[in-house]
Amino acid sequence: MGIPDEDVARVRAATDIVALVGEHAALKRVGQRWVGLCPFHTEKSPSFSVNAEHGFYHCFGCQTSGDAISFVRAMEHLDFVDAVRRLADKAGITIREDGDGGKGNQKRKIFLDAMELATEWYHHRLLTGEDAGLARDYLRSRGYDGEVVRRFRLGWAPDGWDTLCSALKLSDDVAIGSGLGFVNKRGRLQDAFRARVLFPICDPSGNPVALGGRVLPGSSDPAKYKNSMETPIYSKRRTLYALNWAKKDVIASGEVVVCEGYTDVIGFFEAGIPRAVATCGTALAEEHVKLLKNFATRVVLAFDADGAGQTAAGRFYEWERKLEIDVAVAALPPGSDPADLARSDPEALRVAVSGAKPFLQFRLERILDAADLTTPEGRARAADHALAAVAEHPDDLVRDQYVMQVAERCRLEPASLRDRLERIRREGPRTPPTKADRTQARPAPPSDDRDPRGYDDLGDPGDEPEWDEWDDGPGLVSGLQRTATMEFRPGLEALRLAIHRPEEVGDRLEAALFSDPVQRAAFVALVESDDLGEAIDGASGHVQAMLVRLTVEEPRSEPDEVVAQLVRDTVRRELPVLTVEARTSPEAMHEAAEVAGWLQDLDGSTTSAEASRRLVAWILVRAQLNGSGQVA
Ligand SMILES: [Zn+2]
Image (cartoon, rainbow, N blue to C red):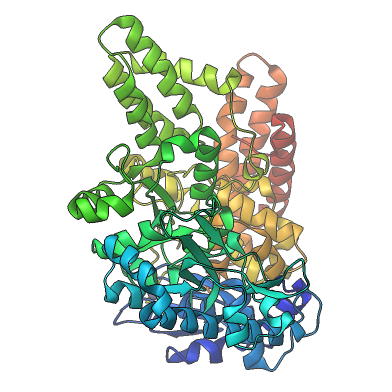
């Protein structure tokens, strides 16, 4: 169910973001921006800023940011498509879905209505039907009382050909379109489910969109579970069972538990962990994780992640980086499943969730626990296995911390393990590089030289709210960080100028002037896009977040000043390299002297522009020589 890009653009263009945000927060005009108390976190002084012209918001307090669509998504917990629909309705715009000019919307409504009626009908049948006695007995035997049955709207599909379709007088179109029925070989409409206990599967707003059916014990039907087929209202890759009920606790805790079965989910709820969801007969897919990301940033896997293996590991790390979530694994006792554990030992289930470990930690412990660590040979073998798992992680800082663990457990020198790890990464089996690996815009790994405040020393922050750290938490080397960050501050101011006063600064900036990889990627995105919106849409992760923030920040410095500072910083980083070359090369010595002269000229009032031009040209040549488009 895609919405064409141009329709999304029309909806964005037709939306007044100030009015939209204004429904949730009082905004006051300050200069080019609108500011107010943040609707996403509690605060006393306004940190929330909206750029009406470009249509973006940013909160300096809780760091949330985005456009009208993400605002609606966050405020109303909707997915992208629903948020666009909501805004389109508001703006009186008809959007095409699957290119059908709005008919798709009407159909969806009809199918959703049919599904709601059927869910209620099946539920009522389970509670009161004479033919549902065995089903009720079965549920009772699983420990499900009337409260559970009502809470999850469980149902009973009678053992008949078309009991539901004829009771609800469903037309062929509606029955088939909603997945409630199908036309059998004799050309007659038949119920999709018969003689099964039903688990309604809802969208995040609680509308039933599909059903999962389980046979009763002793049934001759070989398929224990059966789900609705995919329909215009149900895509299993985008649907998570019970998210509608779990949503509240997921948001409150920032964590979601993902399990494999409907009864596992119910087990978690019964054990007092009402933030569990399940995939519906499919492996956890990126679409699922994107959906979850609207509600929580930590995903706890409560299934046999061990069996998921290496392919899954690559996917989890990719999601962690790309979607900025944490993937952890609940430490379930071996061989147990959550549904059984919830009944036999609910406390163990709670402990498993609260003690969930990062995916790599979990794998490492499995490997080391299974290894023979009593002999040198055994420890070396265990270290090799463990390093193979560590090698899959894309972040070198993360890898190194696990190397230390392996070193300690296997009583080996970290230095030799590091060499071995690098060799495995070079030669060993590894997952194919991700898209993010191949592009320059790769935001990870976190660099601790990123400006933690945002405001640079060129401008006076005045009474502006201060920025917190970018995204990566406290710097790893806070002592060194202070001096390192000073150098990067003009980079942000240059980006502000490139966004707000592009005509004044545009052709005077070069990617090679940005030493911070995220700032450089942001600059490249701006240069390579037709407009700011396109640059933001196309950017990923940290880069996108940075660009959005800068749209609500006005530059305080003059372009000349900022360009000069950037040039100065870049030259000062590159000059020592040249000085080393000068020891053996007379040309390099001459060049170094010349560059040093221009650097002095840069501070002169009359010579500054020319010196700047020469230095930028020199930087570009050096960057080209380095082959990376960057200098030191
Ligand atoms: Zn906020």
